[in-house]
Length: 449
Image (cartoon, rainbow, N blue to C red):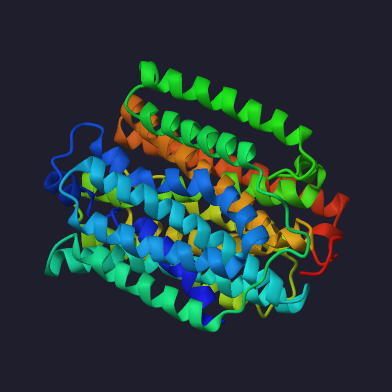
């Protein structure tokens, strides 16, 4: 089962590759004013648009098959990224990597839910899975920075392609196929409407960083609204929808998806900019900023492994993780101004522990909050919310920095993130007090898979 834990490691490492080499990548590709935005954000577009779709397809047509195909596509797209000579080609390759990563994450977490019984075994398995997300975000920037210093920013894309190819081969040879005991017919209208709707939303948010009054932003948001409203209307009429809208009546599903969106906005979307802030405000080298960020991501890897030994429900872990992450951000409030290295390190340490608890609990809730035969879909829904949230958070931070300046913009972003995390922690606790069973250990109805 080790290759399943390699999946979130590889996807998250791939996600973070351009963070510390953005300047070199943009210069080499001849990027214009909007180029760096798409160098960073195109993978999030692919992830956001296809995670839920990939989860449904994995449940119905085979989780192993979806995982192997996604991993193979990730390898091929990595080669294209390594060979790219322009921003459109590179961004297109990263977009495809996002779609491939969506298939990998949704299918692999679905397999984890299928192979581990509810309770302690599943909680420990999802803790390990969440830990590897932290390890991926640790290794990705460090590896990218080191290889860029030694050779070129392109080298790391060749390496991750080779790793993806090896993972695809191992998975094809060793994993057993699994799928839903009640497979559904392909909801093609739902697939098309949801994919295009989320893609339009993320495109609008991403383009909005360069100015919210531009026509392309308005067109993208109007298209997103129309497509997503049409998706909801279509799903209500279908007997076998891609997304069962009744799931939003489950408190555990709301916690899983809502928590993931807030985490995406306040953690993934914000800390992804930290290396650029450190380089711009304090003249740090790419490797220096990557090493500092590794304090946070390293703790987010170690914490789930240790927390897996503690008898604490996933909902309680999520609430505690949000509180610790908020407390850690208090130490980062001056990161764009007068940098206090001890305070920054302390903030990253505390926030890293919080992120580790968050990652493991969200992975668990994603598959516990849906019927047993739709575990990959649950994974897809949670991760879709996470990466839509990351796009929203990154856009909000870029807008605030552009409007208020680097120091004030980062400060306001961090304060807003703290408030959101505290509110989310309070909401989770309210759900725990009102309906504790679904967030802890009670199995959900559904056929065995």
